[in-house]
Length: 412
Image (cartoon, rainbow, N blue to C red; front, side, top):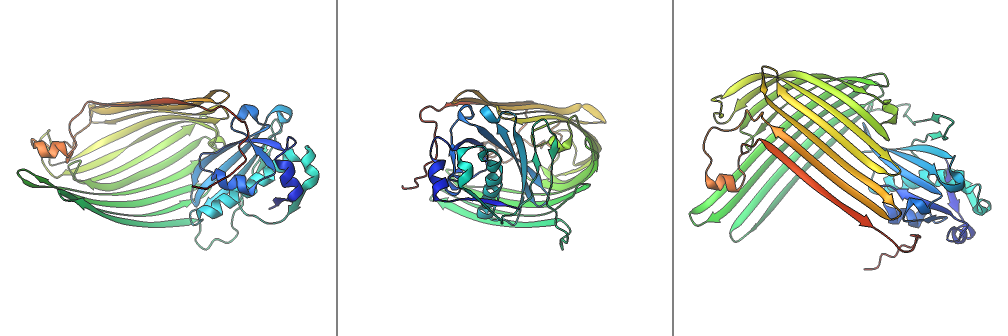
């Protein structure tokens, strides 16, 4: 690995007209920290003012998160693109992660600074950590991921989490208890996931008729095994057990084998993917109260179809997802949904964003057949019958003024 340091002369030059102009496009970065640590470039507010656009995308990995940093050359560097990867461990602190990203950024900037008047003031030393890959636009891509030679955990990552919260006032009080545990293992050939989550919530409200107590409990145990089948295919089997007072479920057990096809290679998934997935299996339900169909228990054959398109580019990002679920023995019991979001840079300083989703619901086989009281409906103690859901949001942002964004002043 290598790192990059700048002396006083480089820091002064970095604020001048000769310094590299950079647009950092990263939702998960500590921007203030990076501006303090990397002072030999000029940060600009819009990619149209930049010589280099750094697009940072992320993916979950077995050990934490994989950051892909695409350095996109603009203006005189238009034909010079390069890519680096940085692997974050789940055991890393936020400080370790941001320092690792800073190290990769320093190395990436060097490829452009070498052709600027600042090149003579840069010092190169050894240090840093993380996996690095390089590539050039038009010349192919070479990715080198650092892998441990001797991992005593064999790529297994475990997590335990719990929290408790108590709050209240004169007319009400609330208690919440949550706990979860997970185990994950990710290699090039296999993904293994397992997670259990339990929740307890109690609300007590003082009404004119006396105290009304709202108690909700739930747990969910999920597992999945995924096998890589080349650059475009994957197979999996997932299943689990769950219970929820809100959904009138005393126990729900599912097992769903499935297969997925990606039109683009999985190695490009941080920038674009178009996947088609199909799963079919069995679902066994035991209910707390008799359902609207007169059932206390039943076993059903279920199927799921999902199509997802993701793209993250210098102009913005977008996701569209279509999902269809149904019971094989009764296709009239189904749900189908469409979700989409878009964030788009229109012109210098102007971005628009929108998201929308809609769903047709015909598969609420778990609904209680008992008539709910007004209090139960008011506090949403049980899931109510519905045949559709929708959500829409949109907006824009416009920034104008100085193109430079170097100074950090944290006072007040």
